[in-house]
Image 1 (cartoon, rainbow, N blue to C red):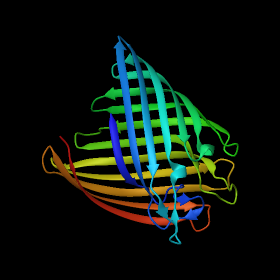
Image 2 (image 1 turned 30 degrees about the vertical axis):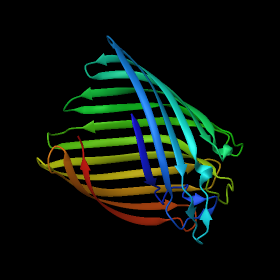
Image 3 (image 1 turned 90 degrees about the vertical axis):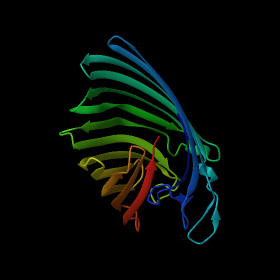
Length: 282
């Protein structure tokens, strides 16, 4: 698989600053990613290996005073390698263990470069009309070049489940825990901080008609900073109406409301986003 995207960064993200200066314009960047996986089954035993590469290049932007700011310090490359060993314990149920290792390099900001790994074990399920998805838990650790960030480790968690109570209703549950580095300075840490991101969400899709689907969702994100006084929590609710014109094209109208609470002064906000889109697939 290979992907390219020219993207606009969410202004609510923790890194939406230029070395401490509040932005006046949106941040735009190029995102290139590739990945490959290989899987094999030997009776009840399954083996898989995979790798991925991602490159991001950020455009210059303007701060709140109109001054052009370079975001080259955020240009980065990330490589990931993983393996999975699974064992079928019953029809449609498999336990697995998965180690992952990654390297992230910032060309113009070496202090943000890091290496990390995680080791998780979990259960995957493929029971049609009942429950599909997987749940895993384990340990993750990341070692940053900067002594300010240092080495950070903690609980790794991931869950993706889909439940089909009826032919017309699908319930999706997602949860995860990861960590990253923020370059935004604060009173507690002028060089930026490492933070844990914990997410949880639920979505319900209802097929009102054969070609008309209504969806509603709720999401929660917690940003817990390490060796810093900052703490942020986001709550999002919303709904989507999707109309299938045919098997190739669909249109949708989406609404999202987000409320963000932060311990940083003047950082709380409420946001409403309405999106209309047309999609094609072949």
